[in-house]
Figure 1 (cartoon, rainbow, N blue to C red):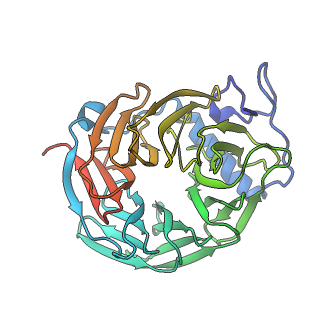
Figure 2 (tube, one colour):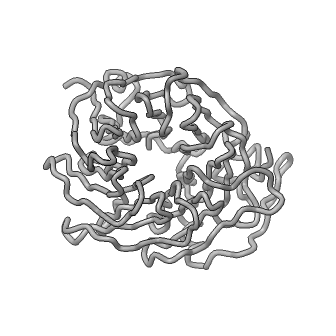
Length: 380
């Protein structure tokens, strides 16, 4: 396992210019980012990393005892088309009122829980949607981002005052399917990875490619990405590959990996950084094992296996750094640090594909291949 993250450093300071004892110095940039983009990344990182250690869950955020009581409260059936059927991707606004879903039917839906209506059906992808994200911008309209096996990333924008949604950017350039993306915490950039062994950084304002990160010569193993995730401070980006590796990059440096982790013996199909920045969860849909890496030591902190018949489609830390959701054959919620199982939900008619804690963690929204959104919460 090669690495350039300092073994004894917190992840947010991993790219310090001078190496301490036991650390390995980062390589220098070969194709530098523009001054504007570098400033966006550096200022965002500085602002977020300086408060991360002291950050606590938002006032009123749910706790483990509350989550243990979660049961299914409501369902939203019959979303997306029946042929082919299935919600393949999910994101939900922090207040829990708006959901963005991607489907096997190649469309993206915007659903309003308050009115109980689908506000938009966005068409343009030519193959099933792999991932979606909702971007809520201060003082500006909301954006939805989607990627697909059709090799594109699309950015959709909401009209003024909640008007009609429309395509804003069609991001192309990859020769293989786009397997995942992550929105930078500045909300001004998006990074997307592909099975063509590259990942790219895009400018959300103009839709232009900022930089493309190619596979490195002399590096053993594959760079064909099957999943992708970004560190909450915006510097580190991780791509899971088809041979079970996790490639961790410093977004400012295209010349060397920050770390390379051996995760699974099968393609890594889901990755998630914890909000505290120290952990990385990984899974494969061909292996019912969850692994948690400690990024300060670049070792597996813990791992556990679900029943052999279980399939895992997504692992995801919540924004309070308290919980990890694991969905696939069923849905499970684990407590961060102790990794105790708090909730198991299996009253679903098809594989589950996504889970999002919303409304200060008081609700958990699930999406599934049975074309249904489910909302779990404590009994009223």
